[in-house]
Image (cartoon, rainbow, N blue to C red; front, top):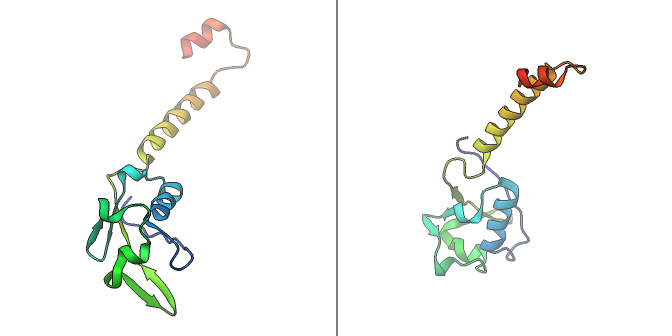
Length: 119
């Protein structure tokens, strides 16, 4: 897959690390257990970075920028390759296409024995 960018918007000051983790899981299909978040050179993990910590507090002045009156935080998500399950989905799609091709080659009026031989 490689690097990609994704934007999340939250009401200013209200969003927590838990909200971000939930958004990543829902929109990017990366489970919480596979998420490693990094912002402003700090890894957001452990007791100091619990789910109830506000994003602005976690980012601190080094990780938060004011862009035209809007607070912007850049967070890097590190996850193992295929943490989103995309490889498994691709493999299953290929199997479905193969099965579909086999089934489409069987005549509708084929006998049971002919179907067994083709499968």
